[in-house]
Every structure is written in structure tokens, then in C-alpha cells.
Length: 222
Image (cartoon, rainbow, N blue to C red):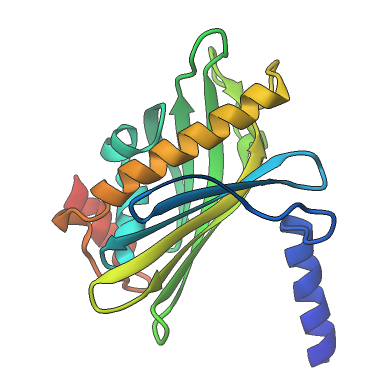
């Protein structure tokens, strides 16, 4: 039975992040503790992996992701961030509106994020999946598709954590693949440079409290 459960778990992971026929990670850019990597998957899409070491609490990432007002301050090209639904204390449906450089049309993205936290290891994981098909299209925006990813925060010492994001998706619409890849890399790099600064602000240094942390955090940021 345990072997069957393990095999099932591995099959799920391989579905989301296929390991075979995938190129190794290649460094795109780095600055300070921020590094952004890319690789082409077996579906010919570009996946990105971004890493930053910052002076923050593990719960700071949750507080930042749930702060609707500050979204445009750190997410590259973000025009607006809206929390559309709160299915549970550990889950949010987040709607992000992006402005795009001419001649690319503006984009929007709807994702469901689910938080998992291990109190013993102080490791935080936020799984992200696309739910754009569950919501009506917005006039003036091209809906991004097949977005999937994962945030991870690992405590390194009493003061620092490592924040990692790995994911991929499709910009959809009429855009050349080379341009989509270039915009993905540049926006990911800009986003992590901004994140490395903003996430260290005192207002985001809150503990992860299972079942109640998110409401307290959002109230503090309003």
C-alpha cells in the first residue's frame, strides 16, 4: 500500500514538473542574492526558477502575496492585484492584471494558491495552479493559460530565509514564442529584485499561524 501511494505521488509530480526530456537550468541573470534560471521543457515551453536570500520571516511571503495594495509595487508590469475568493484559511484565488509593452496586448491571470507549512522545519510551500477557465474573460485583456508553479521558503538561520519560485505558463494570444520567453525572463528577474526589497519590510514580518494567520495578516495590511 505504501508503495502504491508513493508511485501515485511521483506520477502527480511528474505531471506538473516532468523530469525527462528537459534541459538543465541555465542562469539568466543574478544580482546580489537574486538569481533567475530558465530551461525549455519537453512541451517546448520555458520554465523559470528564481531564488532570493532575504532577511525575513517565512510568513512574510504569505503576507506579501495577500497584500492587494502592494502588488503593483513589486510584481513586474502588474496593474492591479485582486483576491477573488478565499475558499479556506490556507487558500486564495488571486487575479493579476498585467500591462504589456506595445504591440503586445495586456494580460491577466487567475491562480489558485494553496499554502502548506511545516512547523518543525519552518518550511513554507505555496502551490499555484491555473483557474482562469473558471472565470469570465475581462475586456481588454488576454487570459494567460496553463499557469502552474510553486513557491518555497526555507529558513537558513535566525535572520534569513531562501525564497524560491519555479513555474511556467502560456501568455496565450498572438505572441511569438521568442518574445514570450524574453518577457517571462525579464519580468521574473524584475519581480524578484523588487520582492527581495519589499519582503523585508517590518509590516510583513508575521508568524505563520495555521488556520488564522491569513486573516490577521490581511487586516494588518489594510
